[in-house]
Image: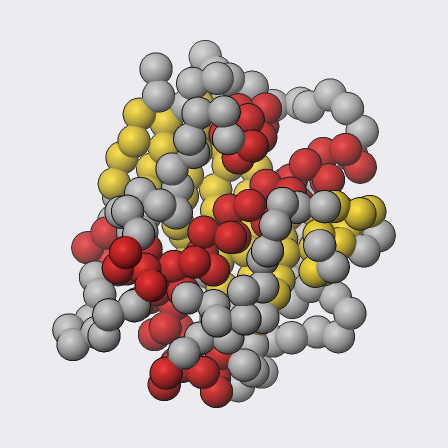
Length: 214
C-alpha cells in the first residue's frame, strides 16, 4: 500500500502579512502528489522497484515559497543557500530502504553549466536547453526563476537548483539511461516548484527532452 505523511511543516510556517501569491491557489500536496499514470509516478516506481511507496511531504506550496523567499533574502553574496527538502518517496524492500528525495536551493549562476556543486561521478545533460547533471546517487537541474515584487531583483541574480537524491538497490541498464531518466524526473518535479514560486519567466515549459552532453 502507498501512504502519505505530512512532516515538519511547523518548521516552514509562512510569515505573517504575506501577500496573496500563486502558491496559495495550489493544493497542499501539489509539490509531491504523483497522480496515477503520470510520468513522475512511473519514474519514481522504477527507481524504487515497487508500484507501492510511502510519500513524506516536508512542505506545502505556501511553506515552500515562504522558506525559499527567506533564503533568497538572507543568502550571502557568492554562496549557495542551504537546500530545502520538499518530498521523500520511500519503500522498504524487506530490510533494504529505497528512496527518492527532492530538494531545492538557490545557487550562483555558472556560465554554460548547472549551478551548484556537481554530483559524484556526474555526467552532463541538457533538458529543454537547460543544464543538468546526473551521477551515482544524485541528479540536479538549474534554471532562472524570476519572482515578482520585492524578490525580483534578488531572484534575477541567482538560479534555482532542483536536486533529486536516490537511495536504491543495484539497478540494471546503462548509466546513461539512468542519467537520462533521472534528469527528466528532476525537471518534472522542478516544474511544481516553479509554479509554487510563481516564476514569471516560465522557465520549465513542456515535457522534458533530455540530451546527453547538454
